Image 1: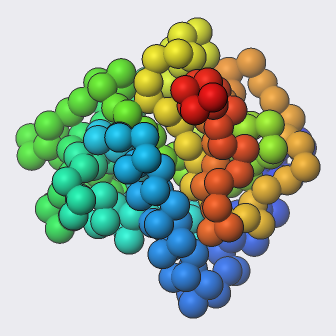
Image 2: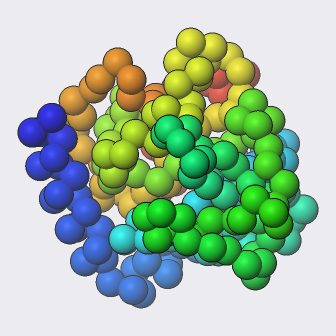
Image 3: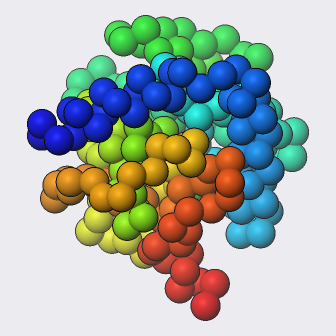
Length: 203
């Protein structure tokens, strides 16, 4: 746990220092890579996130997905526990802050999709390694929400991390409850993609 805390601290500080111009360029490259994956695989229901705290930028991605007719969903905290809901979102529609101050679609204004109904989840992360291990913010929300994927890995959705290439580390310490990634997309392209079922389908 101490090793994870140290990596999390260092990488969070690093990604906050990435210049705005580099972030904009990275956002456009990430958009192109995500669109290529979505079109190639025929994916329609895509969950993303609104970037904060230096995370890989998603604004261009979410807008482009919507413009190309994909259904875009954002995570929303449930009242109790750590499992998240995913609610439909159209760019420009109202959001409200959750208990941590993170904007999310309010339930009265957004349709909710079950996790198994998603085709692709674009997951934020602090660090990743070539084996597909993901280090998040430490809250365990993605791990809890997609715990079923560890038992039934052949079911959708595909879980793909978004990151800057400099967030890759040689190896992350792993835990039994960690969410395995199908791959990671950075501004340099796809890393460790695929590591689960997408590889088998493409073979």
